[in-house]
Image: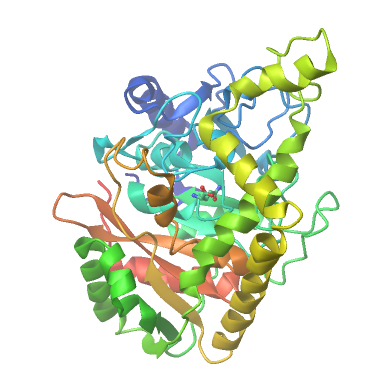
Length: 452
Ligand code: GLN
């Protein structure tokens, strides 16, 4: 992998490498759903766009057969902001509507892991992470509602950054869980990620949740003194150690040892991490069930819908929804239905508030939290598809950042004995993205991960 920073690349050369890799590897790894052969631009840096982010005049499938012929009529704000310096070379594979952790829920194909083709690349932004891991793009944009940028980044040995909720605009993203959705960056290094972030920030009138960033150059990393990093003591209890692969747990422990030269690790209690997953898997499907109501056979895609009666319009296109899409709509409608809403949805929302409060208390005394990105390395294709809950468990370490709206990043921290990459995460306080990236950059220097 090219170790040069993004602003030091020879752009024409980089375009050639990326183009050749796309031609040679896409059929083998199933990375891109759509490739823009004609749009290759030798003066701009080539990047990959997850196929749930709008690019004007181009097809956006969101990974679902339902949208197989839908053309975006406008650009997402994040795309507009990158247009001057960067060029989209293709739209990458994802779990249908971004519901999943492996791209096995995609309506198209399963993206293969760059390090082992029998394993998943992670999800839902699996195509974006594999594109960066395989040098089929200089960087990629994804979306992170519950870990979809960080988890695949950790499986593919690259950096995955989820900003504070509201730092980047959601305008032009296929909405999943609107109170959690954020665009995120997948890159070769923390520097590249920060460099790209510089072009993406600033308030967007098209997304009321966005705010003006106080920092405008995220590449001027700065760490003062020896920052205090929290280690969640509950991760050492059986509940979590049983869930975690031995390889991930031992990498976590050895990473802490390595990083101790620059960071002061302190133990914190964050028992609620245990409840973050159940709360996430109620809140998100509830929001999904409402967001999916727009796919009514009239407004988007749904070309298969028969138009003889209103019922036919509503129902016939729905057969194109993948199983996980239907499952989430059912779970969401159930958790919101009268008689059950207080037991499920409202209960989950109060857990969310508790998690937010607890984390903001924690950040009064520490600078960041350090934890693994996922309990396991990339798993075998097909090994978790029979039991959806097993798949959901892979998100145990990522979802609390989304629930609390705080920034988080996954950094490659080493390999297991099968040479599969492992990733570690940092969480920081809301709007502390600059601090987070500065720490992540230092961790990256210390880990000295070699993704060749
Ligand atoms: N894996 C999580 C889920 O399936 C996260 C998805 C996401 O962040 N888009 O909900």
